[in-house]
Image (tube, rainbow, N blue to C red):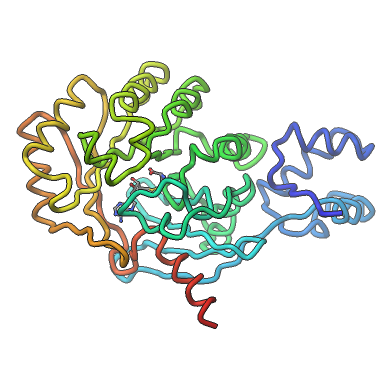
Length: 347
Ligand code: SAH
């Protein structure tokens, strides 16, 4: 029988498992503390449990690990990019960034992606599978083990579309924020989406306190559908309406992500249309100079990002240009993983 993934079990589920084993209730708390606070990787080290129970747990459950396959440290700032191998041999990327307010980790939520955004490397080879809750959690635990300090902030902006894996993401949030476990406030978490409208509303209704970030990239349906096929299903009007709903229900300001691409989305007219679209919205715009990927011909001249920002400013829209951390190791999102598969194929 396959062992059960204990790190994917929120407290109440573990409690049920422990009850079914005929163990007293307080054992759940002990085991949960070992797993999520002390982050023990081996049942045999859970010294407050009897030897017999440790062996029993080891026969029924597994404590998954991720393996660091590659690690690239920037020589410009403190950004570190990890390529993690999952228990089944697939790969995902995780990026550690340092800000004045502490350490922030960008995690992946799927192996590959279905969304087919034209400028994104994560989607080039298609979708393989969803990550389990423990595989999301372990990106944090393994990175902390590697650096020896605590991660304070989290962004779900790595490989994958988090709202396309909502059930596992919600279980992950439950594990992440449980004060009996890791105990990170969801106010320290940002979830980025390409705009799955029903899931945005569902998330709003849960009042989790996290920040929603919408990848907009164009204020115009025709153009947005060209670069982001998801727009054919959920056009800009419906997407913005869902973002407004998110703000109304949660009181949390939505962030608008906008990857600036020469000749695609940064003309004066684009700025005008963007300003009109965001006119009565409580949001913040983040401009990202597009990161070129090998397969596609998208690029940005830095001065065009600045021009676009100025244009927006004159129209009354406050926009910041995202600091391009670790530019020497950047290899746009998803490229490390793709290269790993290619290297393996070559062998
Ligand atoms: N699927 C989610 C989260 C993952 S992508 C989403 O779409 O938001 C994280 C962010 O990186 C998104 O804003 C995405 O549009 C952006 N992105 C993807 N490829 C990029 C590239 N080559 N250059 C700049 N930003 C990119």
